[in-house]
Length: 140
Image (cartoon, rainbow, N blue to C red; front, side, top):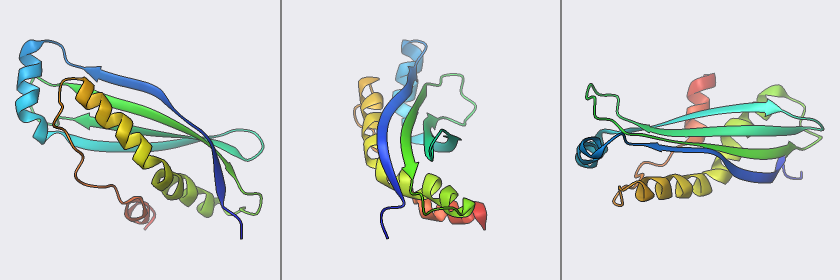
């Protein structure tokens, strides 16, 4: 069987880094290890079996401090689903798992560059996202 989908385009739709002042920057620099990576995936059907898949990564401090920075990227991917794929569940899995596994390396690179360019050069995302596991937890 041929590929289930083909990626036609990937691009940064929105990019944000917000640190309100020097006090916040210095605080965040010390406590950035407490930030959590969040991911949201949405999709929008287009014409002729094309789908726009939007992957949003945000890096947030869920604590009580008023000194917080905000980091977020909205990454768009335009894919075309193979004509043979008709099952809605299979299309959902393609959007939530297969596309994510293909684009994540590029998405993570842009996001890490955002954090580094925002003054946090030592940041690494240690934990890799297991999209298959997330999908199975969501649907199971």
